[in-house]
Structures are given as C-alpha cells and as structure tokens.
Amino acid sequence: MSSVRQALTQAKSQLAYTSASPDLDAGVLLQYCLGRNSAWLMAHGNAPLPAQAGYRFRSCVARRRAGEPVAYIIGRKEFWSLNLLMSPAVLIPRPETEHLVEHALEKIPPSAARQILELGTGSGAVALAMAKERPRCQVTATDISPAILRLAAKNAERLEARNVQFTLSDWFAALSGQTFDIIVSNPPYVADDNPCLRETSLAFEPVQALRAGPEGLNALSSIAANARCHLRQSGWLLVEHGHDQQLEVASMLKTNGFGDIICHVDYAGQPRVTACRTASCSR
Ligand code: GLN
Image 1: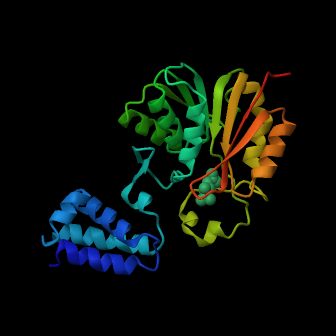
Image 2: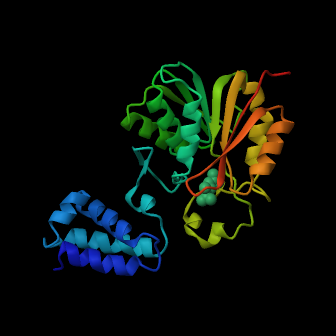
C-alpha cells in the first residue's frame, strides 16, 4: 500500500503533461478522495492511503489526465471566496469574471437597496457574489435551463443568500416590463469556429455557455439591443467579453444608446469587462 506522499508524487508526474498546475490538481483531488484538507495532507505524508481512497484517487487522476477540469471531477469551485457546487451543465466560473463582480459592486454603495439583474447565471456565481456583498439589494438571476437554475438555487440555499430569485428566461424574454438599476452578464462570447472549443478543456464545458455565433458576438449584441429598456434612469450595464471584442462591444453599446462606456482589463491585462450607462429609455 502506498503512502499519501507517494500517491501524490506519482499523480503529480502523471498530470505534468496535461495540467498547467499538476501539484495543485493532485493535492485537491487527493483531499477530495480522502475528505481531508491540505493541512492534513501535509502533516500525514507517511500515512498509508486506504485502498478505497487510493482507487478513487487513481480514477480521478485518470479523468484529469484525459483533460476533464478539476471542478467537474470534485463538483466544486471557489469563486469570490464562495464555495459553489458545479456540474458539467454549467460553465466553470473564471477568475476574470471576478472583475465583472468587482466593477458592478463599485456602482453600488454598501448599504444601497438596488435591483440587480444577472443574465445567464449558470452556477449562480456572479449573482451570489453580488447578493452576499450587497445584502440590501435584490438580485434576479436568469438562465435558459431549468436544470441549471436548480443548481444555482441549491448554491443560493447553501450560501444562505436570501436576496436572490431565479427566473427561467432566454435573455430578457421573461422580464417584460421589469426594470433594474444594474444589469450584469457573462454571456457566451466564443466564435463558433474557435478551435479552443474542441482542443482545450473548454471541450468539457457546455457549448451553449461558450459559443455565440460566427464572431462570438450574438449574445452580446442581443443584450446590448435590449438592455436599455430594462434599465432605470442612469442604470449601469456591465458585460464580460473576449479580449479582442472590446471595440465591437463598445460600438454596439453606442449604437444602442449607451454612454459612459468604459472597458476594464483583467488580471492578465486584457480588455475583459465593459461598463456603460443609459440616461433614459426613449421608447
Ligand atoms: N472566458 C471563457 C473562456 O474563454 C469564455 C466564457 C464565455 O464565453 N462567457 O475560457
């Protein structure tokens, strides 16, 4: 029977060619299989690895070697310090999406009671981060899939976020007549023919959360075209987009009557989140 340390060392070398973070991945997968935290692993390197846990660990490492993201294997992902349940039906929240949350929160004073809308919530990551940071605000989070909304609602329940409500909607379709102070979205924005969709770990993620037409702009343009009449006076719209979509996004927002258009960069210094504002709805 191998020790905890031996199993970890072996897994790290097996993952070296697949993963950009083999040490971290091996550690997280072993913690998951043992039901222990990283401190326990460090302190018990010489402990024998129980057969059952060893079997599970080898099968998790094999899945990771085949390219499956850790978040789907363990069914969890940290986002904005929230521990979220994951399933392969939802996009894994990325660190860069924390910029969307951060810039949206900048628009809301800590004690303000605003109405927030998130379009295409997936696991609920953005809506829940905002709801927890601004407990006096009311957050509406939409998705097109009932199963996905059930997962998001489960996350809300586990995090005791009582100021979020989930609505089944294809973008704004079910929100007729409703207005908000802030609208946020991380919609699909990858071009249909982008080889990343097949050749990277994106292949494990739901295509409807990623692909958005020939230039990846279909969802963004639908949001830009319809957001204005769901925003209250001086309300903000913030969207995440591809690093090379900044100009197209700014132009479609301008065409649809938005002003104060500002693009923010992500951790890698790439254009990633655009914020804009409307004075009033002219319709
Ligand atoms: N940021 C994701 C990626 O390229 C795409 C997410 C999205 O389309 N919303 O990996």
